[in-house]
Length: 247
Ligand SMILES: Cc1cc2nc3c(=O)[nH]c(=O)nc-3n(C[C@H](O)[C@H](O)[C@H](O)COP(=O)(O)OP(=O)(O)OC[C@H]3O[C@@H](n4cnc5c(N)ncnc54)[C@H](O)[C@@H]3O)c2cc1C
Ligand code: FES
Image (cartoon, rainbow, N blue to C red):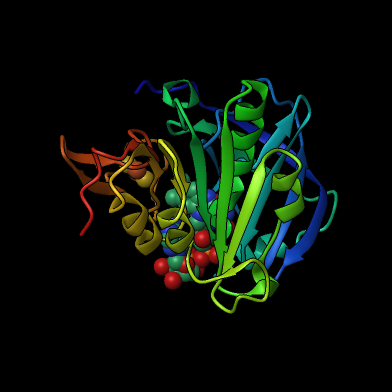
């Protein structure tokens, strides 16, 4: 996979609203003179945090990008409190995204929790390609579900929640086991990715790791692959199913 051009730019918050429990949608305006490939991410400089924080691009147009993020610690808490007008410096165009042109047959997008966010941009791309695809998205509980309608506008969408209050009760893998598909794209918690991988289909997986630099310099985000150690920030975050070695 090749490294795409990265760029640093200031973006201004134009909207920052809560979508679900601890989950926010931030719209940032700025010059989007790069084409965010689904699965690519930005690294955000947050005042008070030494390291930038990586967040995937969920959606974009020529003058704004949407990020969906879950509040898990100091940095994302600060993001959630940002008012319209606040400026953030972004390193854009980071990582290697999904490669939808390599998928064929019946395609399924598999998202877990906030991992559904980058799959939305991918769903838009697959729709534009007239691909045969559906989405299977899982959350712990009904109050964490977001973008169900937005996905349903693009493709048949199946939801799983642990409590069964929205969609099926159980995990995304329960739905996949009863489905017929040829290729998958997945993003979500490690255990979910491991479960999806174990079903033995071809696909592409977006991995996550805590990041230092975000552009390949610090080796802080290494993971084991069939080709040896790779850096998630530049060699990934998206890897082919048969490359990833799960613990
Ligand atoms: C390529 C990439 C894309 C990402 N895209 C998104 C996204 O679209 N939306 C979103 O909500 N989050 C995304 N993340 C995760 C996000 O970067 C972290 O949740 C965020 O950096 C946490 O910052 P914090 O200061 O709030 O938390 P911290 O105070 O730094 O940490 C709080 C807790 O979160 C855990 N954590 C921190 N960073 C990560 C990480 N990278 N992976 C797993 N656990 C982590 C810590 O171990 C700790 O338990 C992405 C991560 C990567 C690597
Ligand atoms: S975060 Fe520095 S090499 Fe990946």
